[in-house]
Amino acid sequence: RPGRPPSEVPPPDGQREALDEYDGLLPGGAYGGRLRGRLDALRELVGLSRTRLDASALAEAGRVLDEAAARQRLSSRHTVVAVAGAGGSGKSTLFNALAGVQISETGLRRPTTSAPIACSWTDGAAGLLDRLGIPGRLRRRPAPLGFRDEALNGLVLIDLPDHDSAATAHRDQVDRVLTLVDAVIWVVDPEKYADAVLHERYLRPLAGHAEITFVVLNQVDRLPGDAADLVLDDLRRLLDEDGMALGEHGEPGATVLSLSALTGEGVGELREMLGQFVQERGAPARRLSADLDAAAARLRPVYVADGRRPPELGERARADFTDRLAEAVGAAAVGEAAEREWRRNAGKSCGTPWLRLWRWYEAHRALGSGIDPISGRTPTEGEEEEITARQRVEQAVRTVADEAAAGLPAPWAQAVRESAVRGAAGLPEELDVLAVRAGLPRGRPPRPAWWPAAVLTQASMTLLQIFGGLWLVGQIVGVLEPELLPPVLVMLAGILGGPLVEWACAVAARGPARRYGQDAERRLREAAAGCGRARVLDPVSAELMRYWEVREQYVAVTGLSTTGR
Image (tube, rainbow, N blue to C red; front, side):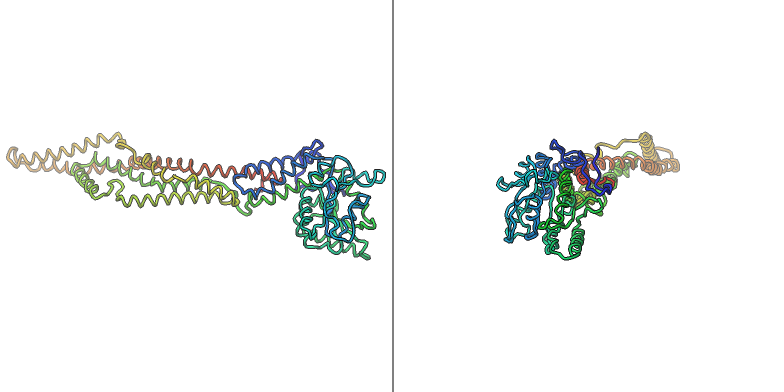
């Protein structure tokens, strides 16, 4: 049977709801139901987060797990209730009144109680008292069986030192025991019920433990007329300001009542409430559930960033990172160079021999001046471009890390950035190797099917020029009959046809050259993208996945719906 979600309100039947046995501490000593699931989730959460968060951030969660394991090994038939209060509030008197026998010393001397004193109604609570550090000499039994209220069987009542004691050791004992008991009875008097220390140091931080809290206004016999009701109403108001839910009209929350431990007025009502509370045997589970809520609230800043979108590394961020790497590695420039190389090769094969001779001369002159004939840059310009490329790579890594970390709590955002920086170490150098390896294609560019015909046509135009020139020379020297027009026309056909063929080939070469350059750019872009993905994007994605894993565990600890993430 599943546990009740925390947002569900129990039916207003006028009684404190008993925990489902599967959600509480079972007789065999194990936690059941949703409570066990929350503990398992917290344990998994702590394990997954140790390498990402400081030990101090997980300290409270670790303490809750340790205390849950310790309480699980001890008696599930007993409920440990501490009686706490300020000096002079009458808590020891109330302790004795509930026990039905003089156990704790009372009087005007302060502090009266210097160490916790225990009173156990039934046997089997030794382990619980050992956990509280109460020695055997301070363990008592209540009134004899014939005078004992059997409804309190299973109750272990602890009288604590004054929480406002001048002795630091006494206050330390109060703080220590309050973290270990199953429930607390806070005893206040008409003079100190609004004490700032009580509300700011104890009640307000423990507001989430309202279901295991009793707030008792003692010494009402000292108040005349309706003054007791007025003080009680003001006490409820202060508790409401502390954020402590009040168990009124059948709703779960703190129990607030007034009594006089000295005269016995209202003590019977408190004893009856305690008896019902103890017999439910749900206090340990309620205490642990409240501790889990408090631990989850402390952990919220390191797992949830309010008001920001969920962290992700979307396609837009990946594409932008790939574009930046391609720009850094010069993929577009390589594509343009490959396209120029294809056209240059076409010009060599399909161009006129005289133009090819001129281009050969220009290329040798460029080499002599230290200019790369393909890229058109000097070595100094190449070094400056390399520095710029490194800066572009670093900028790309920073940008994608910031994009992935946006929306993450600070520790996890830092972990994402660190994973990106680690992966980017050596990335510029690896991209330089890729630029050489996957840059300009080796060897001559592939030739289209029409290339041989174009070469043959250009050769024919050259032969026409040579033939027309020889014909004309033969006429000049008198070997051939003088007839100027035919050789001139033949030469003119070759002279005009050569550039025309070259122009036609250049037009036809645009498409293949562009595709050849695009293929070269695509290959280098894909190589750079693969390198960036393996070194940066995959580690960042793994870090985000780890965050979502711990976020799921955190949601399980809190019991929140995953739809509101």
